[in-house]
Image (cartoon, rainbow, N blue to C red; front, top):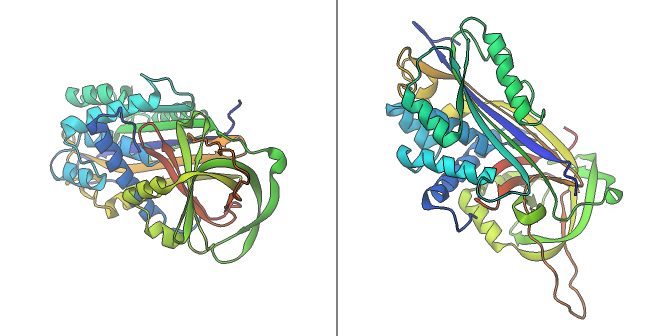
Length: 407
């Protein structure tokens, strides 16, 4: 079966220096540390969603990618800077347990021990100033636990060449879906280290939609206005639950390794109320109430591309000192100069169509009866929330909302 749709993401942190003043449900095989890490990452995911969702419109990002890139950065943080990062990122483990847990999670996602049938690839890399003298322990940790080798570049003499090299690597890792991650001006002669994470995912639905069933139809926006959208339709078995004011659909991808979780309010204007209930605990509760059901699904085809500069968002969440020269303490990375984070850039792309997107699934067959009950209706013709979840580790890899399929 061909797998057309894909979602990818690149996250990046840029560390600069200034000499005088600053310039611009888990698998039972998982160990306790990995389970703890996934729980904390999920808590950070919904907290970050809460911040980003305050702006109107479509939204899509990879909390996993951001957590991983910042996790590598946290390895070099010390003092109050490390404390703020730990609290903001919801890292509940001590560093000596946290980073190895990241390593084991990366190995599971990459399918190092158990072959994966979905295309899911995670890649990390450090880009450091040539002959800068980064701390050996920092380089060893990022290589061992994050598989992030150090690529030496010359930011001082030619930052533009370094920027293009970084963007080319991200583009290659994401099958050319994430281009120009680092805009002009984000890498300068004062940059000393860039930490990158790229994640690529591609999978077919467990129950593909027929292109013949896709029709133009109306999608009702939150303000009541209607726009035209290509609405896919399928009748399938999936995890389904009806909550107060919204319904939840756990729609699997092939082999059930991953699934897309759709949260659809009854009222087209009801998404903000549902978003207020979003939490790591509630996501587990909603999935726990879902039962195998025959569902008549209507879902729009859509693509979302989003890019964020996360400096201000992370500061508002409590990670302040890391961005301030003089206060930031990254002495675990290098001591030659004072380092601080000058930019956290994130870009994501998702494509949902008849053949697939990203994730795993659950299949059910009805027992023979004299008359089957009518199928549940899940008509996503108004704004909804969606997550892409790895069912092997329980990790929320992607999150987003569709407010307008024409945007």
